[in-house]
Length: 207
Image 1 (spheres, rainbow, N blue to C red):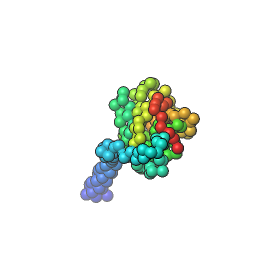
Image 2: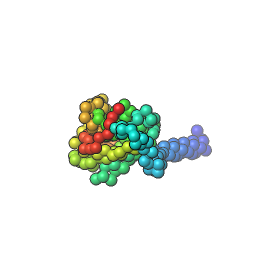
Image 3: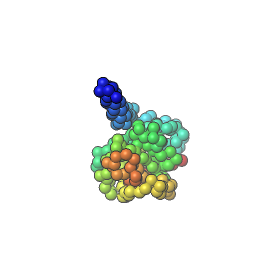
Image 4: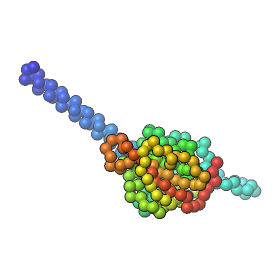
């Protein structure tokens, strides 16, 4: 190989590496910017319209969210942790494409304020990193179009992804927040960090 050919090869390899680096940079930026943009948009339209009030002559039905009205990616609630200064808009679904928008409510689990287990999952890097500073007794507030529900943190644990105990239904109203662990792990984190909380009030009727 001549000196001129080697020089061309080096230039070509440099261009390929540079292009690859730019693509990785753009991909990483998208993962950060897209959730931020969606959360900003959700804040502009929150809260959604509340259910229409019944006619005065009719008895008031118990407040409840109609689960069938929500589809994947819809904003279903606003979650705040006052002590940590955390605020997120929760979308319906926990598929990878949905979690790019924000923390996701696991379809099939209880909705905020209802009896049963309400499960919300989020990415540790773009959403739930603040959970690393959670304390027992912290208040978590979930607000929907029909009201506000408060939960109190009872503890947290680190488990393997195969441990699904936090996904099981419960007779009482509880909340489980799930994210990956360790928080600053590079790549696919091997464990899950789960915050457990119990409802402190008030309760809305479930379906």
